[in-house]
Image (cartoon, rainbow, N blue to C red; front, side, top):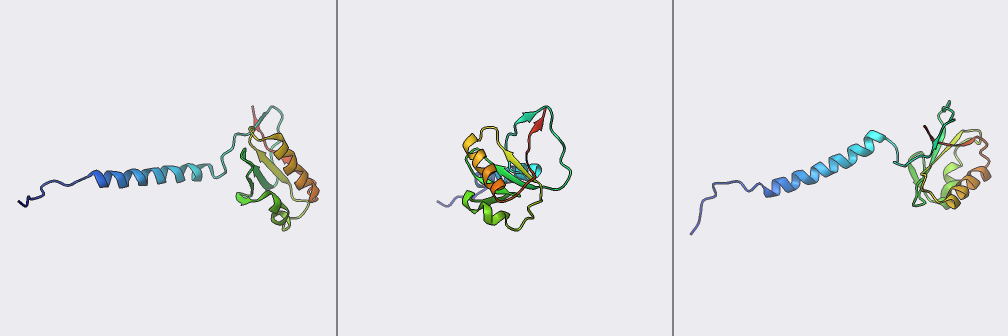
Length: 124
């Protein structure tokens, strides 16, 4: 009753290849942008950045990133302690961000003594 196998079962191979494809496409998307994806607000009169600033990103869910490193809102002071207070700070906030979270972030950054704080927008 033993039967010879004369075909290769390709279903497990296809499953593995689809998983690998999903992983590659997911990581390639993040690597190609090189930034945390957010939808910036638009402005007609926006100035170009001159120096390499400290970038703080605020996502709509309230998560905060300092130079692409996740930071808790209450740990923001500790994360910014190593930077000089004259360092330019650029805040990247998603347009869907709740205004209260944005104001809280700006207040915390200004309260730490940073004087050059600006908001990044897309030029239309």
